[in-house]
Image 1 (cartoon, rainbow, N blue to C red):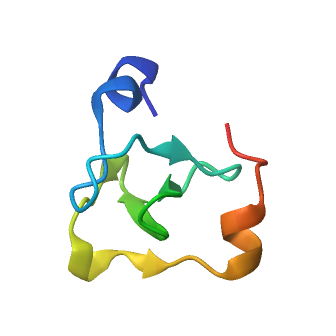
Image 2 (cartoon, rainbow, N blue to C red):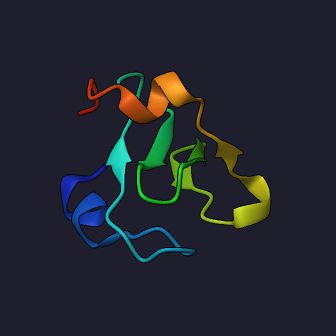
Image 3 (cartoon, helix red, strand yellow):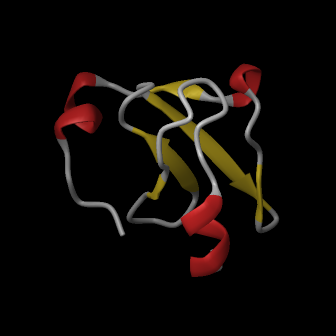
Length: 64
């Protein structure tokens, strides 16, 4: 994920910053408690495509 792009992307629901998960496959919104997938290098920032974070994931800070 391009660092410049990551710096300007925000959660479409909460408008909070997003972070890249350790695997580089999802963008995480800690505030919104959601993970948005990255498919073929393209972030899919649709609420209907996001999954809800587990409690452990919300507390985990091991993101890039």
